[in-house]
Length: 290
Image (tube, rainbow, N blue to C red; front, side, top):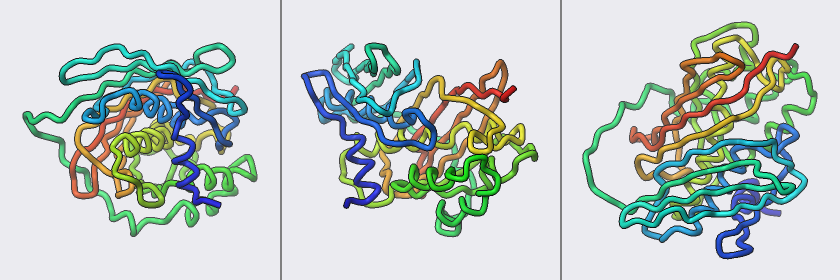
């Protein structure tokens, strides 16, 4: 039996069934639908398979259109929108049961020198000083409405070492806090040198905790606590500098706004040595159950 990371890499390795048509499968998730990070990462993988090797992803913009069915395959159709001298653009539509469930537009660029500046990396403790998921999650088991939530969360995150700097939303239920959270993450093992693989893994992880800061602002614990329901609406990422997803990355997240049943999360991802690697923005439906 392979490791959890091997299972995740196999999941993200979409199958080519035609020149620009790919097929992905799903696996059980912490919630009874396809995990948004999975479909976004698979769509980026499909797009990247149609792009010349000298170009890497520099941005993506995506919409979650319908809830995905984890029981059937997802078909990804790639539209070769543009192949320019420096940039390549691809649009991907993910389909289940004859209907689109997700759409992504991604842009790729060949290496180019240019102006250089970045925002500084925020302060954060060393990741090794923080508890692992296996050490942290069982201590919150009594706050979850579902007794199997801890096991499902641990299974969903087994391929990634993800460590919270501050307590997660379910660790401070009923206590509104500053709408900001930090996590360190890295793949749970060594990866190949393929930049597309590292980008896909970062996309996968980026959907795990981005809306936490929305919940923190209102003292809500999340789906496992049962005091909110929600789903991702859209997701955007910009890849600024080379990085490795099997080395520690600091995910610094905040929420500038929540209104109209929606919450917005934005984040910057730095490498451990301080380079700004990615920027992420996501909006999600977040509703209080009646």
